Image (cartoon, rainbow, N blue to C red; front, side):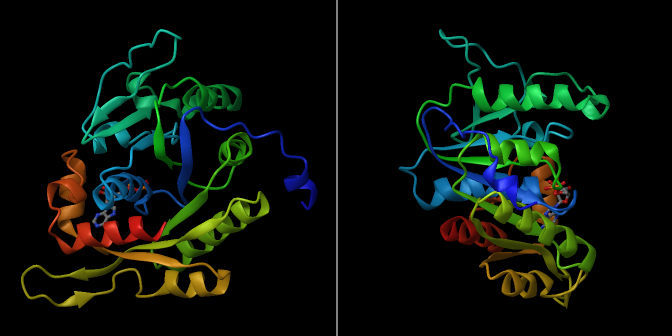
Length: 261
Ligand code: ADP
């Protein structure tokens, strides 16, 4: 395992992109894509002079089209690169724009790799200060291949405070360390639910597991996102909270993550 990092193929930057931040998780369903979207919007909200793009590398279950309320096929530029679709000021690229409701779950490894290559190399981003990449969940070949192909400024790992999610989040953090990608920190998602009727707070998945894991790994806890109906509803409507309810505490929580990366 030691030589894994040594034998890396040469990394090639994505043209025009200054800083790539990957958003990863050990497990699916912990809020990785929701975090990626609101992080991208949060980076822009914190400093509107920055240009931010969003790449959906979750080829098995692309959710950026829905979360960013975008659909359609990208047009090609003069040099035959795909032009990202834009909403809320964020250029986005996703497998979801290229295939129609297929179940890429049946794809063989090679097809997945060539899809990833297309998404990494055949997009005309223009100039970006940040490219936020929504990674596929887990720590397999696809994740490794992304980390080996492009220089990554850092990884943000999303986890719920539940033991089983934390265990996988830890694996994720260790994978990044092994391939020399700095782990910027952990985002704890869905730790607290506040009842909208009586304001009682419930820690449905536990209260501070991610904080403890961050301590163990010696990385920062970048933020704590509450389990909130508004986040789920707005996400489903393609109106992420950072743009649809900028004054809410949940939007503030995402902007805080953005200012910490
Ligand atoms: P992943 O990318 O890890 O699979 P998603 O971001 O798609 O997870 O989130 C899974 C589901 O949970 C979505 O329906 C999303 O709207 C919802 N969700 C994510 N984070 C929160 C949160 N903090 N509060 C409420 N719902 C959330």
